Image 1 (tube, rainbow, N blue to C red):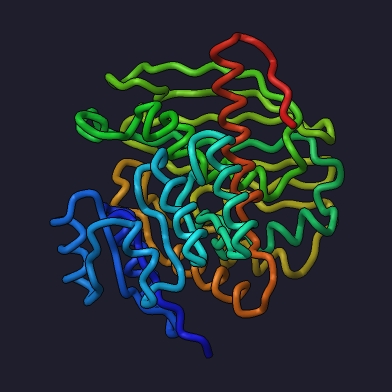
Image 2: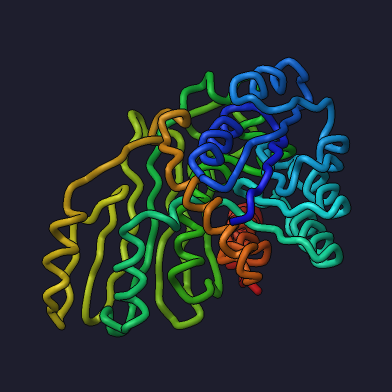
Length: 345
């Protein structure tokens, strides 16, 4: 079994998630980290027995690093990702991959040129419930899917945004959609046909910040299915995220990591087991406190990336795949800004 050495760029809250996830993988070792604030990098390195570097340029050239994880503010993902590719290192990058399509495309191109792999981090894809849900979609149990929507009614305090990169256009690339709701938007990109068009409104209603803290978009998928995206950080005290998919033969409502409804016209014995396993609402991490999110699915995300590398296969959440959610969000921002329907693709 190959042992993979990881270096982390950035030493904030999410970097600690990465370090813990790497520590739970038998054939992975956290060997290095860096941050623009050297004291922060040293603190993270000392906590986990890694080596602190003064810059990502230096760290990515180290022979003790095989894979670089990117845990910087969103608008600072491109530069270390490209540098890692030029140094021959694979990269797995936090969401969003970057805040513009041009910067994302530069990241993808750099790894294609280098022959290295670029993967995204979308932990919700690794929730256990997604297995039977994907099976139900793939086997046509919904009949004609008529509606697919996501809701993220979360809460963040003013202190979360004050003096921070959060909610800024330059480093966050947006607000409630680009930072928090992107996970659920990625679920639509993963489970549903491509979104054809959006009509949207965004607003800043509950905080003093540059970008939106509330957004609503109406969707039309290429198949004609309709849907809604609702994302906010101004819904006190924070409520569970929700995914709904319904069709002529079935409906599933997913709340957090559980289901409140799993019903199909063609009833099957396994439905009883699905309800038994998932009809108990679990979770709540992240609805009001970003530090409360469990890192277990980060571990699964990293493991899947390593498995793809070892098998020489394309990673499920490749650069082009992780790009999709950002494209949807940017189309929503354009629609809200211009007051018009925006077509994707």
